[in-house]
Image 1 (tube, rainbow, N blue to C red):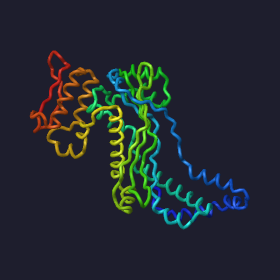
Image 2 (image 1 turned 120 degrees about the vertical axis):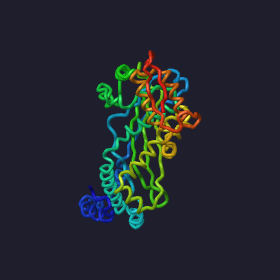
Image 3 (image 1 turned 135 degrees about the vertical axis):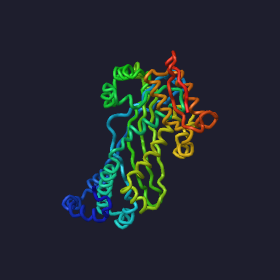
Length: 358
């Protein structure tokens, strides 16, 4: 693993020695436009302009949505890291307003960030932020809406859909093919624009962030009925040295913070579509711990959704049982509160019926 704790001043000295040959010619130029041009390139390096036409969601669209699938684009950007601003603060002040020293400082900071990016992406190499977000959205839609959502594990088993996930700019026939393969009328696509951690400096706490492009499309004609940019931040409250130690040495800490901001973004998506998010508190870790003897709503809804998708129960049975599960989880039904509730399909003439057993 890269040495992510390297002192930025050491990086600065190293860059100074390497860049003398490049910088000296600029000092000899009478026209300062070249220096300003180079400085502008450094300042704006890595910035991306996201040009996305946003389409507001209208509530009347909901009556046309019955079966929906949530997909994420196959490619995902690496996690962004910018946590060295405090270390660079004093050297930047000492450099003063002089262009060349400031130029060196930008190079040093960029180099430190690149090392942090490489190191922390290696730490969380097994985390797919797109998959995590889709899973959260899937469960929240089951809790808050009447949409019938395809189980996420069913998507990975379909090679046709998997290949089409690689295409960001799909044609109407692509959406139609996805709809036919999965039996859905609506497709929700998630594109990760950026995510990671940032430390603004001495005046603010570090935070985890996530920014996504979300697009809802009809499967029959590929018409976009909702598109938006959704983003969230979650502050990381802890001492500076403790924060750096945890980030680089405790993978679960970093994953936990990214999980929190992913949850916040998924919640915003639900709210933007106008659904009631009161039920989503059931997914909080504290709730699961306190009511483990009752029902794990996230797990049971997933099981129920699989039964529906595999045609072992009807959509109406799914809807009815889902509401019953939620009511039990909220403690409004005395039945089944002392033991873990299990789902089972009855072996009667009607294979679509379902019952809750303890």
